[in-house]
Length: 372
Image (cartoon, rainbow, N blue to C red; front, side):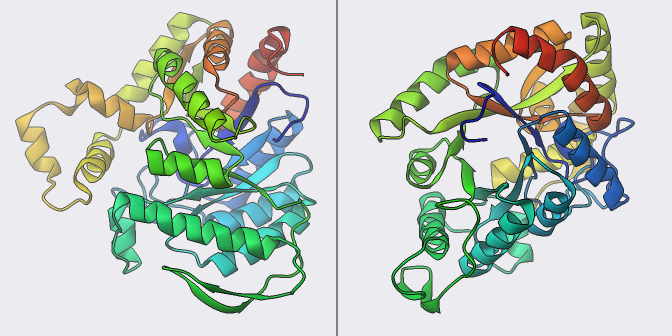
């Protein structure tokens, strides 16, 4: 995913939790997470089709129970190890909430999966924000910038554990970690180590990416929004000496043969929306936790189906691209024109969505010069 023939990269996002990043809905043919073969089959199909990456989300806790969207989750390092052994070319990522995994453990697991995959491992490092999961681990949520200070120290340790130094071990005395005789052998296949991506639009989040990442997710809500946000982010990265930093967007694709079919399917997905989970998620994001939130109270006070902001939470904050293959590729072209160099895409029906990507979207992307 660094370099390579494809000018514009495409990765599949979230195929490690129920419904994936297809959104918080109860539509048919979403990821059920009923057996490992379901996920392995999707990864192998993406691998055959030439998709660039396969990236999970880090979720440890569901919103509204195990039979609802995001209610079941595969842990991402072991998920990556299983898929690394079952694929040939695609970049396989683990997504790590750094407050919950010790850096020595993470560095060792990453190096192990890098060897299993023959050098195809990647790390999506996240500083964390989801307060109920912090509480589940018995950890208090630090202030925003403090989370990135911890992440910077964590990533510095990981990078040093991956590096080949004169001494085979080292001590580390930081504000958050104190290590004696830290070591990790063998080193990863990739040099200087597995590629790293991060998401963070704040100044602290950007500085973390400028120092440690190969890819930064841009926080954009629409194709049009990207045209104003991404150039400034590119300017900031270049000013930090990171002209090589890739800027990516999270995208929610609904593709059908006609625009009418795509719009009708979008209406179906919204009708099948899990409004309780979406509202719960919104409340946690806005208030830090779920205390004081009542679904019954909300239903009595207003109609959640008329709340436009909820649609953002249905899509888990991803940029919506809805329409024909031509319309999808036109949106991707506009994203690239704004400075985006790749996407992570969530799909409602991952199986059908991958087929449409291979048969309809990728050929048009090749015609547009976006892919080899």
